[in-house]
Image (cartoon, rainbow, N blue to C red; front, side, top):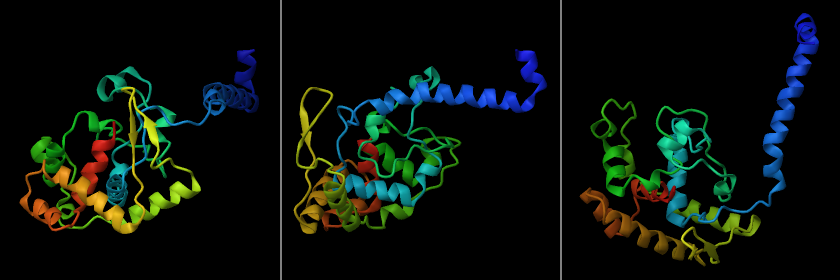
Length: 230
């Protein structure tokens, strides 16, 4: 049979296609059959975290960093548990990525701190010798776009029924509630309150002064997002 296929390229190609297609169906059908539910512990982004996600996308961080840990021992040993489909329930768009110039960031919140991110974004090579990542010093001066982040929260809440203001099951058995502010001013106040907690763990005095004056730098929003990746 195999010798016959080797002599007939067209039928050999068809056989390969059918085999791969069947294997793909076996791999993916169970996921489609499951109810589309967020993984326990996954919660919607806060206003500040969502603003940081926008900073992440705007600066093409996902071009060099994936957010998808495949179920291979070499990856789980380095990055932690492999990714689950329900962990992306609130990602629009998802940021799986297709290239790893830098490490995967799916669970970076488990092993990096605010202080580490601050120093790394300011001078990557000083923190990771040999790093080719550029410095992102402008993030320490540019202001995060809280207006757009809040607009996205309102949209996904109404259109996709993202459960803001409702208890979300967490892995420790408790629950967490992510608040959707009733107005843009409320969203800005919530984001600033969260930004103050992050800035308290930072060393850059200019950033601290900006937050104290009611401004939220992009670096603070980005760190909020990175800290949420667990």
